[in-house]
Image 1 (cartoon, one colour):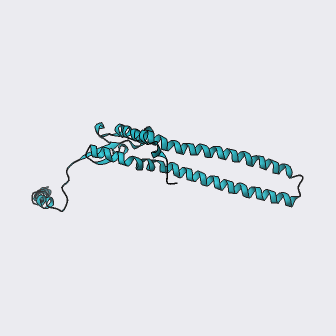
Image 2 (cartoon, rainbow, N blue to C red):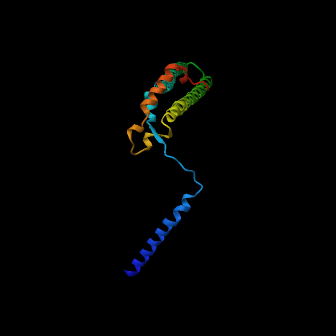
Image 3 (cartoon, rainbow, N blue to C red):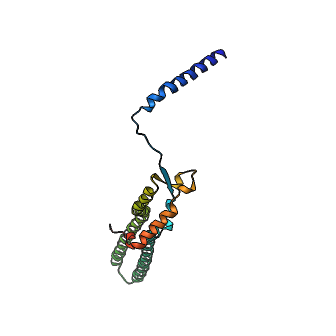
Length: 193
């Protein structure tokens, strides 16, 4: 017991010595002096879904999706009608001629399906890129708000456990983006394609 007490006192003495004599050495390190600045929070999902710009970008993808669904329905109807006509010809055509027509039809169906799958993948990529595209367009306006509040960082609310609600600038950002979009509705139009 006495030995443990001696070891504990020695350890405590070592910690105090490091604290007293080590602090000035650490303070003189090569690290810059950082003055505390504001950190702002933003509900990124709500910013996209509630702002006019975000809604416009998402609506573009939704419209493309609806158009693709309609196109797929029309193609299905056309192919079904063609398949029905081909089936009706089966009895009146020689087997080799029917097999050639059936193989040509199957090859076209496969090609059309692949093309439609490619369109679907491209549409999914558009949908996946929409938030990044939105944030790229919103960045200058969010930067303006950071400058207004002399903030050093803007974090997504979902990554913070506890915070002061006064740090949340989502409503102000939505208002700023809505004003910018009202002045220039073409900002939602994708020009890189």
